[in-house]
Length: 280
Image (tube, rainbow, N blue to C red):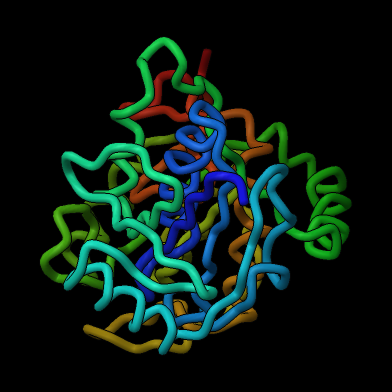
């Protein structure tokens, strides 16, 4: 059996978090000649979706769907011992100070950074690993991107964090939402935009400011603090988000507040306040 590394994100991790983990693990595997498998937790972080419901396969990466209880088992084992048992084999848990062994288990981003640091800087990949939606999802949104001339628009992404202790803003408070809207509304009303947000309030406010404002229809079923949000455990809305990401990445410029999947692949398009690049 060739040398192998398996990697796993926490059960609550979303797709961007999982991609960051896989990026480091695959870079390590490529440099040190390992095979790599991603254990995809069918858990709350991805609305209990299996990998193949959302994404296309990654070249050189084996994907295994595992249940949320199995994620919990492996998480506890990784925290309490030097090795975990999976598929009839024992895997060394990657921790600070770890060196390469025949079989390695990389749990979450802290361990992934350990692997990354083992790669000589000159051999670290420059291109980020990109998540590609399934062909079915692509077939639904590619015609829309062409018909609506998304490539001529400014993409606006506003992610509202659900955690009150998250250092990122905005949180789910009207005051912080208003601050974000006020900043974006400094753009002229005639700017053609495509909006991606999990906040109904933000979407409505931006739609009222920009004369030509596009967004994909979705349901804001979660009520909190007097405003409504997309339910993160809705499979339908997660698929919609993948379509939104494709649209965002097609835009000419992108205002990114809170981050989104594949944002690293379009970093040259991302602009910051006061958004002068829109007029360049």
